[in-house]
Amino acid sequence: MKYDRICLMVPTYKRVANGKLPRFVESAIAHASSTQRVCFCFCVNVRDTETIAYVNRLKADGRVAVDMVMEKLRQPNLSYYFNKIYDETVFNSPSTVVSMVGDDMIFESLDWDIAILQEINVHKGVGIVWCNDAYIAHENLCVNLFTTRHFVDATEKPFMCPLFTADMMDVVWMITAKETCTGHYLPEVIIRHDHGTAVTEDKWDENFCRLSPLRTLNSGARQQKKAAVYANIMAANLVKSGVATWSDNYSGYGVK
Image (cartoon, rainbow, N blue to C red; front, side, top):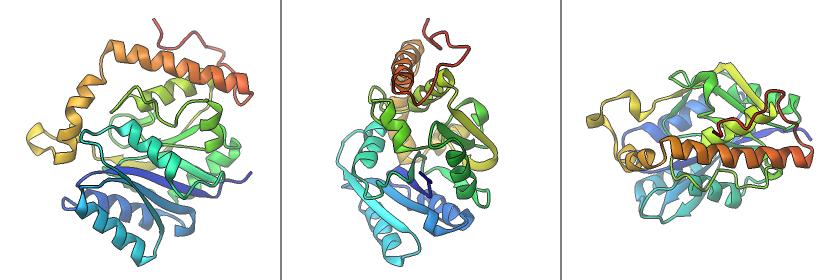
């Protein structure tokens, strides 16, 4: 199968007025080789009328294909949002790459879509691809992530680990990839992460303030071990299905 399109999957909340969501969208469009290779699916809270209006305007202008799924949680839950997009988006063709990206990211490399699709196709849809965040993660953590439904489904688990409501989902995928040698990093492709931790707390926007308590709850040694155990189950399922093999250095990564 040839993978020929990338769905940018984006949970978002009240980031139109401060410009972050439009900046994300416009940077992705401006730096893509073709809007035919890119589509967007946003997960939006039913009470966030400003974002709903923005997404509807983006749909109407016709430059790029757009989908929107609605959520109505009182408290944020990022794994739920990504899994809802994965399950409900109309952009569900097996040849469309799925993603974990944030509305605080900025695409800075021209033809980023070609680079990701080429890497996905080289590996026949097996594994995760991630790009340089130009912040603190780089090759060490897939804070942006691109993969295929073929690979996700072979884990026999949801797209994002439902044990975590914020953070740690990328850690789960990183461990899984390390255990099975299925991680592919593109250092030359910049998707800058304008993360809230780059500024002092008094400059956090409403969205980051909502997520901050969850980031604390999802951190620590106990959460790291939960992530490692879950990731090893995902890795074992990949090996069992014949999609991947164990790393030569496999030793139950992260499980102590």
